[in-house]
Amino acid sequence: MSTKTPATNALTKAGIAFETREYDYVSGQSQIGLHAAEAIGADPQKVLKTLMVEVDGKPACCVIPSDQTLSMKKVAAAFGAKSAQMMPPPKAERLTGYHTGGISPFGQRARTPTAFEETAMGHDRVVINGGKRGMMVVLAPGDALTLTGGLARPLIA
Image (cartoon, rainbow, N blue to C red; front, side, top):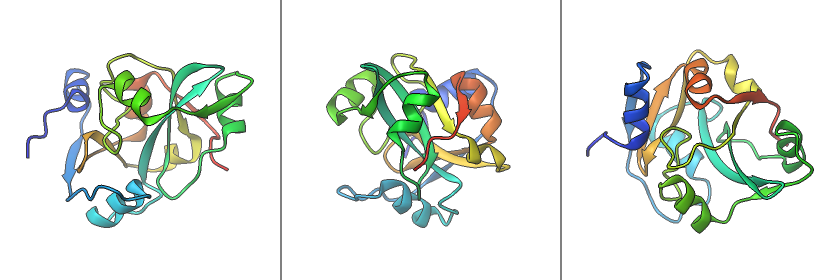
């Protein structure tokens, strides 16, 4: 399986050190991040899922531990907005250029404001989708924050 994606290209271009981890993606999983964590033998708190949201009607990206749930109230506060809701999957796919289950915060078609769950920043390394189903990248959380121009904020319920 090729490990070249817009996400890995963006990481390479930025000079960020990362490793890839591949696993057999099973479609139809309700907890894709937890499935990925189990498949690669990683702590679910260190495996981060990428969720596309709309804050006051504008697109944004949230990255949280795979074993946690997003709080829309905290998402709105993180972006200085009044409201937040999940972005419909077809819209997220068009906006990012990735398929649901393979959305990465790196190398998206359109750069969107990004927020990472602040507790994830305390790990030495985190695992984030690498831009396609069944492939993850392992990197320092500070590097992920820097590349996306993101914020570290409380996002989980």
